[in-house]
Image 1 (spheres, rainbow, N blue to C red):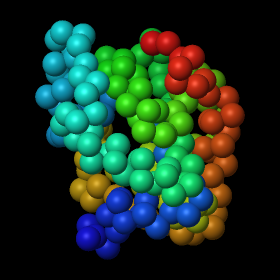
Image 2: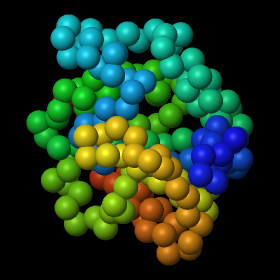
Image 3: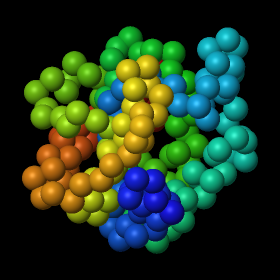
Image 4: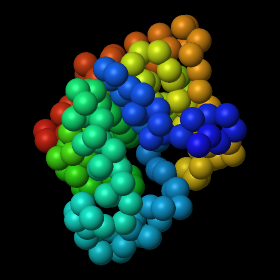
Length: 177
C-alpha cells in the first residue's frame, strides 16, 4: 500500500537487508495514536509497559521480525534539556523498543550544534532510501505525512548526520531524564 506514491513503512522495512536507522529531532510530537497514552502519563506519571497494549504489538512485531532477519535497527533522538514531558514519556516507553531489538541513543541538542542535520526526521534504509517524516508545527502528521528520496547527496547527508549523532549520543540505558 502506498500514500502519495510512498510505500508503506512495513513494506520498506521488510525490504531492508542491512540497516534501518531513524533520526528524531523534535521535542514534542502529538500524533493522534499517542495522545491518550501521553495525556495519561502527563496527569499520573504512569506508563503502560505492556507490549500487548495499544499499538505496541504491531510495532514490536515488525522490529523483532526485522532484527531477526539480521537487519540492524538504530534510533537516535536529539533532545533539548531539560527534556519536555513528551520526551520524558518517550524515554519511559523506550525499554520496549530496546527489548524488541532496536538500539536507541539520546543526544542533548547542545551537543549537536556543529552537525549538519536535515530539516526533517527520517528513516534511512540500507544507506540507499530516505523516508522523510513530515510534521506540523505542533507535532501532528502533516499532509502528506511522508516522502522519499534516493538522491545520493540526500542519502549521504542523512547517513552522515545519523552517524555523527550516533557517535556522540548516549545509550538509552545510561541516559537519564
